[in-house]
Amino acid sequence: MTVRAKERGVSILRIAFAVLVIVLGAAFFGWRRYRKAMAPTATTTAYALQGYVVGWRRLHPDGGCPEVGAVEADPQLPSDVKNVTTDPWGRRYNIQCVEDRVTVRSAGRDGVEGTGDDISVK
Image 1 (cartoon, one colour):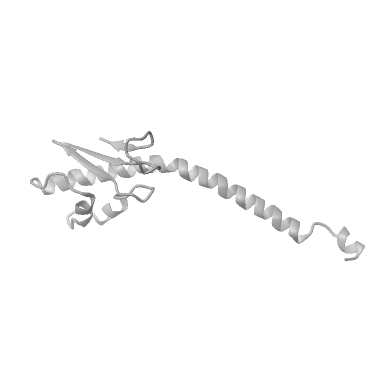
Image 2 (cartoon, helix red, strand yellow):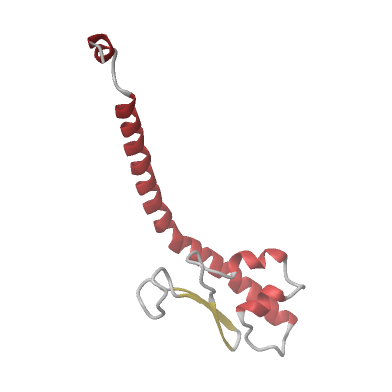
């Protein structure tokens, strides 16, 4: 390489490295924000599923407390019910009914029920 080539400026490798560092930094901070948003998303979808379960119980007064699959498969409910049957971590919500109350639960990020990250909507 001649002296002139060195004087022309920054090499393509330095530019590529700088772009890589910026992209990795943006991905890291974007992932952290995404993970923080998962719990509020789980709460919102649990409330939506709770509404669908209440509607299902009105349509099926002798049906007791439905499993998630029964709510999903009911043709009388809107088709978007399938969008709220799993939590943001990919696991199905747990539905519990006591008299007229419907509780929808998610085991949270760790997937273990009874820990501090669980989501419960009553």
